[in-house]
Length: 178
Picture 1 (spheres, helix red, strand yellow):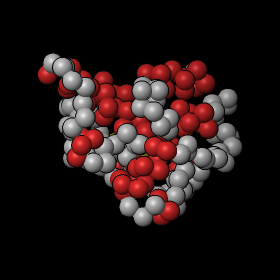
Picture 2 (spheres, helix red, strand yellow):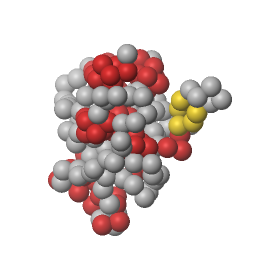
Picture 3 (tube, helix red, strand yellow):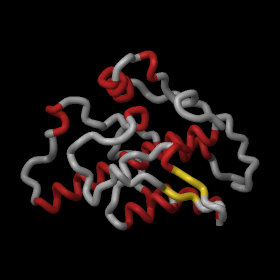
Picture 4 (cartoon, one colour):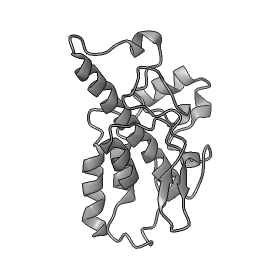
């Protein structure tokens, strides 16, 4: 979360957060890699790994052009940047879910992509059905009291407006890790 906060504080969105794009250095510091799809402002194009797309990802040409009307250039740029930040939070929520359940893509996600068959159907499923998951994380690794299930639930909120921003998530975690 701190790394993502750093990226977002520079008005950069990664747009392709997944286990393969997160590394650990020799000092056990977490590092994001592969910024090839990142942007200073999130363009209107859909980029990234489809299984890590949040439900609000445009799934048609019409949706991708559906932006608030009468906005200044700066407001449009901020709109897409904020959308991109919420996209990154969703994707990181999926990674944390996978790590807390000790499994990797695609074996352990809180939904079954194979039931839908294509990206369009998958995105519709995410929008119309609540995500059901149960984490088996046992809280034995030094974060006494930190509820990873709640953290994941917050990050995987399907409504992007209700999905917390990075500051709120950091405040939640810091209550238990200080």
